[in-house]
Length: 259
Image (cartoon, rainbow, N blue to C red; front, side):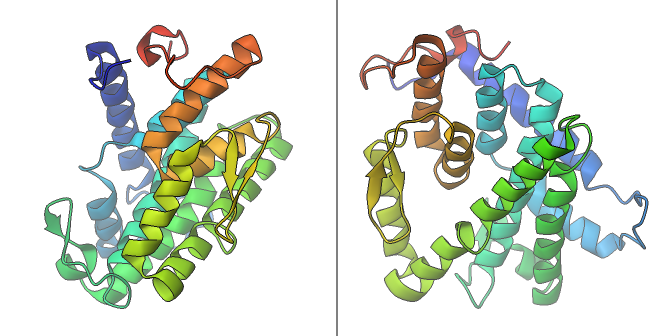
């Protein structure tokens, strides 16, 4: 498998990014939903500033692609991907704040707290995190409320105290942000589908079966490039009950899982 993406694969990636952009634009509109009090224009504009018009949308793409392996409707997968993207965008807003990375630029533009102000950036991040759980609990995700509950719990645990926030805390307080990120990247690249990273810095070997979706979500968020390798392993397991050798991955666009 060469390092150059095929035109078909690029089209699939671009199509998911385009659909995610359209969906996020609708979800982050100023239209008030039932039980909401108001959607302040400045706050909505700030959320849209940090969520629209940038990024490759790799996380939604990997959610859609991995869901297709199991026959999940694309519309439902796009919604789940949008929820994940909202959490991703919230984390970037808060990471850029003066008390964290103190970054002035993000994707070639002023970071949100520079374009608006610190308070608006904090609240926009809070709102993006919260709306992610609004999205993941919607009826369109799955007709069974138990499934929606399990998805919500999985999202909370992956992004919260014992997940993304835990990683950020240890990286910033113990290792330093740059060093912590490098260690996390190395652990995930070791063998993302046969090893699960533990937050004490060690990895443990696992047999990918019941936890496949949780692992997809974790790698989609933390390292999309290694998640692509995991997706190929997952597809092989679902078809052949065995992972492919590391050097024998087929072209994703020809596997029939994006149709």
